Image (cartoon, rainbow over all chains, first blue to last red):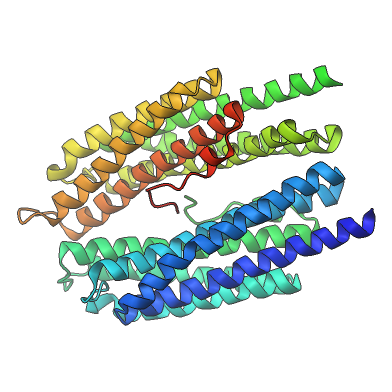
Length: 224
Length: 224
């Protein structure tokens, strides 16, 4: 019985890694589509989001099945509940990547990002790809040191998010209303992407260390 | 055993109603704070968000306890899992109300909403208060006819959200970059608030009818 349960837990973990890999790919391609005004790439990201949604549903069903069949308690139960929550978070990260791609597609053949904010978004793209990669690695290795890296990447994303506001509020800002709207929304999508990665990192830390407080640590960030 | 379980399920339901009432109060006060530039009211909404967070944690712990003690299966298990998900959604709705209040507070003593968008936000406020009230009622009564009302309110919010973009992109838009940023973010907060209400409504419908598809029905809305 225990062996079956362990094997099923392992499968849950593998499922989360698979989801995270797809999210990593989606945010990377979405950022490239955005910065290079690549319509086809944007389209691909949008079209492939349903695959992340499908994995989430599969994983959730597996969790419910596991709860019903094995009636886990204590730590085992918390692992399954945490897997449910992480899958929901990864699914939202996929949605955010899709939103970035949707903005890119909506402005094609133009550039969504105003020239004065471009450099900031180049760095947001890098930070987001990095944080997504770290998240996958953390899910794979459960090395809680990586959680600190994820928090650092998220701090970088938050600082870049503030930079977008500073750019738009500077006297020299010549963006059109459409550009101001796009920079505002894109900045928010990237910022939320980082927040969600931190949420995953904290949940993994909680599973590994059993430190429940770390999961519920108040965030200095807006949580939507 | 069954009676204890039923009583505990009832408690879970009551907990969700309590959360939803707080969310309803928060979005109502946040909108008033926004439209009347009421600093104290904004402050109150922001300060009281932790109460919603506390209820969420309590409710989640009760769910985990229930799973561990009673090992429910089939429908009972799905009810508990759904309660977990609804509490997470209500918590995010509370965050969104707080974000509206934060924008109001940030612009005080000024008005965050540009004059050209004010009428739209008056109606968004009304629709959001309405959808929040319906959500509480739905959680209380499990009358699935109310779910259709929630979807309708959300459609209204989506249409108003589009109106904010139309206003900002009209040739006559004279908003400052700060106003464009605020209208963009506020519009997004209200739109997301409606999406989350729909998510709650679908989950309740799923519990009452057992129609799993309704819970996972693809939304025409952006899900972040």
